[in-house]
Length: 255
Ligand SMILES: [Zn+2]
Image (cartoon, rainbow, N blue to C red; front, top):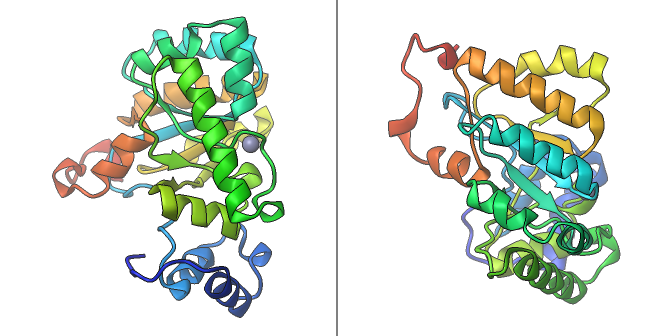
């Protein structure tokens, strides 16, 4: 969406209601149309360009420190794979207490951190001001965890709820509202069916849970076999606007 009018609650609700209510749009591309109708909200990032040989693994919440350390270890063995984390503010603070260097090490390895809010509240329960305050608190937690103030480009709403206060925050702070094209945080039997269906440009949703880490392991193996590189959201987003990085016809990733 490239409109210049500011996003207002009125235009947001009008667009959402005209399309059957925001909740009814969950998981559908119609939300993008609702944004367009509102004329101003930043465009939601669901997936990168399909002809790119890239897949972006994203990990939400990040509460379990032991599993985070296990994932760090796994990623250290796959230096060509970079990922994006969406920790809550609470998770950042807790991890900093238990392993003060963790987030700094992950960032130093090229992984990216996006905002997943401080308190993980439903955006629809917060005013725009409360959402802004929550983000500032999250940013301070990230500052503490990393030891420097990070440049944050991406934000994912708690529970994937693209409510007005969240979209307004993204507009005001120039954050890219980010969802996903594949949910690989599923039970192993289902993951074994879904992960092999990976496509270039996918943004995969995972959490820091035991089976998600196993699913990530499977995904990293399949990505290597199929010629996909695991990239951060920044790489995927920027490459999606750069035609020079597309697969050539005949490449495994172009199928
Ligand atoms: Zn979450």
